[in-house]
Length: 131
Length: 147
Image: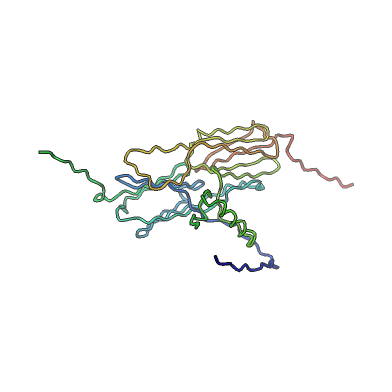
């Protein structure tokens, strides 16, 4: 085990105005696979249609959403468990996904991405004919 | 080795204790505590002023009609359920990170709530509840008369 040298911190003498920090979070996702498609379900509460950006660059699918501020004007924060964040998550797609058929739907703060599989890859059932 | 992403929206992870310790240490040394990870579902924020409190809860995927918001004295309770999705035949769950099930969250505010005037609305999976103070408990500004 290595010992990390901790630097002594001296307080800043200059006044610095701080910007409200907007963290980037990974939204939790569920990924389901069926014979025809992949389905990615992501929690993006507080984001409307215009706040979501889904981009596909070669085989990297990136989901970005900006959460709307819900702080009411004229109020002081009393109890805080979350901060308005930017959601971002990326997925690497395999060859079996049909890039042109990717669909997205948003409902109640849940984004559902449907990634259909290329037809050639979908399993085909071959019937056995008994003589 | 802890490879759980630090900025995962919901902070539960098996390395909770160690993570907590390292985070406290980090915060003590650098004064920075970002990331925005919440602990429990749903994550709730509460703001107050002299007349009301405003509560916002992240409830993605919860049907607003199934929520049960009740107010008693100074306590507001939110009950609801995010139904477990059915595992259909032929579906293979590759990854499950979202939590499901029933939840109850209660908050005791520093004032009595006026139940007649509580309003709640839900948009984009975020519930906002406005809880006004009982008239007797509204802070009143006292003017100083200068003779």
